[in-house]
Image 1 (tube, rainbow, N blue to C red):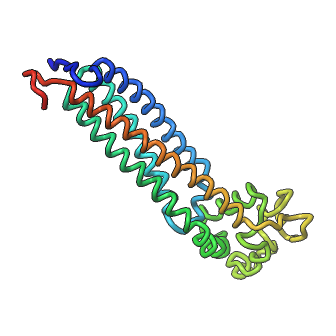
Image 2 (spheres, rainbow, N blue to C red; image 1 turned 180 degrees about the vertical axis):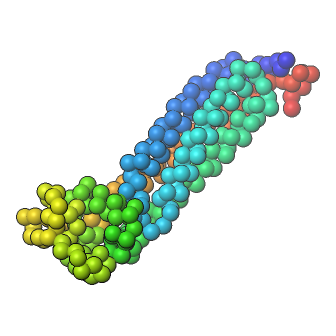
Image 3 (cartoon, rainbow, N blue to C red; image 1 turned 45 degrees about the horizontal axis):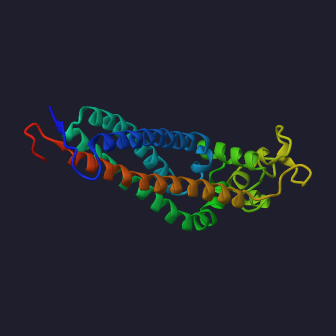
Length: 251
């Protein structure tokens, strides 16, 4: 059975209590990370669908992975602390370092991607609206959701719908804009594009604002929690050095 060494500036019981407190906070942050990631995947799915790159999804899924690792590491850390088990504690420290790298990467990638969000939307959002509506079911549902949610019409201008693939390649379409542009949604309400009937605001700026805000929050969470890991690594290493092996020798 491993025994504890009480030498040093911090006693073993103090370090053990300190690491327990950290591990509890660590567990709470893991639950929070998973909640934010799942909420993003569910609630923001319609906004993500119309993006041309997978950067947003990649950041979200990576953050979700980090959250799952946090939960696993927290339970492992609890066992390692209670049993004063050096191999388990070493594994715990390794996981903290790995999670630190993942979360730091999420934060950095998020802030880097922020710089390209506007140019990506400017370059691809209008094309997505005009070429995929009614030709891609998932994107069609997302576009309708976005126009209804943001009370907007068209990526850059409601008149863009007149040159969309949906309008120019379907002679049976009598609408000037999709029904989701209407202030009062009824079948074929988009046949009139008068301002009393449809929204004139473009969706581009509202999409840009939402994505930048949410991406900034995820990046801040990733970087903020990664800093917390540094304290856990330090506490874990100190505790590791205060535990002797079965022969009374430090590893």
